[in-house]
Amino acid sequence: MIIEIQCLPSPAGTPGDPHAHIEAAIAVIQGSGVHFEVGPLGTTFEGEPDELWPLLRQVHEAVLIAGADSSVSVVKIAQGSSGTRTMESLTHKFR
Image (cartoon, rainbow, N blue to C red; front, side, top):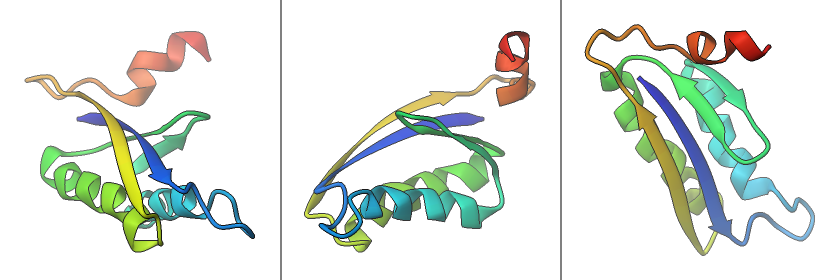
């Protein structure tokens, strides 16, 4: 399974650290041990569904725990019955 999430917290951070709430969400992904890539408009990560579904919730809620007043998350999920899709298999041609 591959998931891309874009967290849109309000506010995005604090006066001293304007991206603090977004970085809190990324830190949850980093700490999970799954393979991930941070992009300019979202973060993509991959793994087994039983591992990723709870992680997705943790990432979404991380911005609120970090102090955001509210948040909207835009999520894309790719999953096939054979489980052969990977981030690498979808992007290697262009790298």
